[in-house]
Each structure stands twice: as C-alpha cells, then as structure tokens.
Amino acid sequence: MKGSIKMLLEQKRNNINQINNELIALLEKRFDLCKDIGKIKAQNNLPIFDENREQIILKQVEEQSTNYPKEVKNVFQTIMQQAKNIE
Image 1 (cartoon, one colour):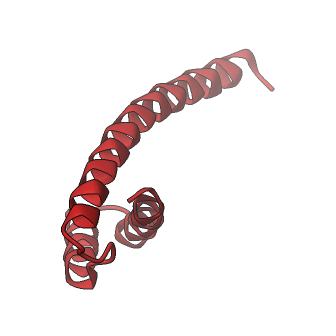
Image 2: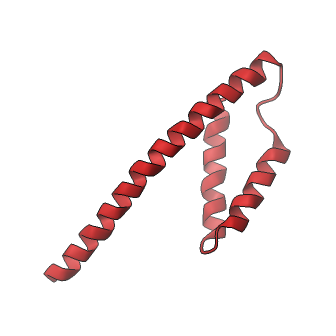
Image 3: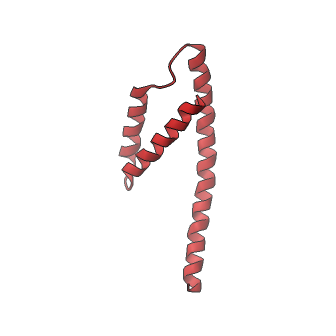
C-alpha cells in the first residue's frame, strides 16, 4: 500500500474513532435519561413501551437523514430497544 493511501486511511479512521467517542458520550446521556424515564413510568404504573412515540421517532429520524435514511432508522431501532431494556 502506498504511503499516501495509508496516511489517508489512518486519517479517516482517526476521524471515525473521534466520532465513535462522541457517539458513546451521547448514547450514555440518552440512556441516563431513559433510566430516569423508566423510574417515572414505574412510579406511575405506566408501560415501558410506547408504540406511538417510537413510530414518531423512527419517522423523524428517517426523514432527517438525507443520505442514509434506512440505515439511520435501523440504528435508532436498536438504540430504542436498548433503551427499553434500560427503562
């Protein structure tokens, strides 16, 4: 592999690593909020799963993504499943 290609790949991978770190921090904040919501729901005998809210969120994220709507929607489905586990 040529040196310039290797440097370019390393730079792109470093950018991905930085984004991963940002995503982790944001996911942890999101999951902390989900935990709080779960406590509120438990105290008020409310169900964890709110299908209407989930569908609204999935529609919004799919519409907001200009380049990868299906992929973003799939990621959010996974995030929301994990959030339900935390709640």
